[in-house]
Length: 278
Image (tube, rainbow, N blue to C red; front, side, top):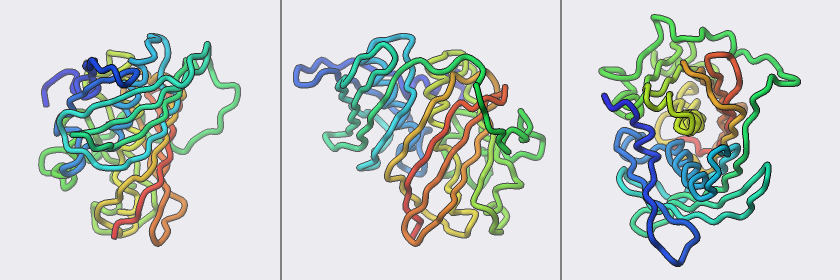
């Protein structure tokens, strides 16, 4: 994928003329933003956030929290988004978003918008993720080409993805801790545009392979609900991402993503409830 801004294209919106809803948009999500044949959940979350920001009309506001319930898995192509502004505030605003395809609702989202932090934190607990190199080392697995994940994780065609091989035990047929770490970087055009960089960072809150794979549980692990928090706008450079789980049950498991930027700042935190592969 040589396009300089593929994620910006995926989250670009066209305003639709409708009188029955407050705000209506369309987006066209390319097939590279898929896991297998279906649109990637983090990309759907980011597109809903883009629609909320567009409807609010505040250039300085960013999606601070995006809470998404997944009802159906859409195919790549056009999706329609309808929005309702629930609150316009000086510091916090709230917008409901519904994504559908061919008249079938796929996602319902609640988006909280405001201005992210810019000052240094008053208190911060050090993260083990900060010990990861700022940039992927030479032995990091690049997802692409003949990599075993490339035929399923098509996102690697729209950004740079490198897996920490010491954490991805499933790649060598072993089992290990329920944590997977990786480095992700958007394409130059996506990184240069602040709004797109924010949406991309939200997307990375759902970018790792399911941690169930490190426990020998393979197959589709559908996300039922996902909430992502933006803590600050990401700096240019590689994003360090860790996905982890504390309890993998018989049916359900939670998966947390932590995303640091090149300065070591926490930019995104997310948690999802998903189903254990059958």
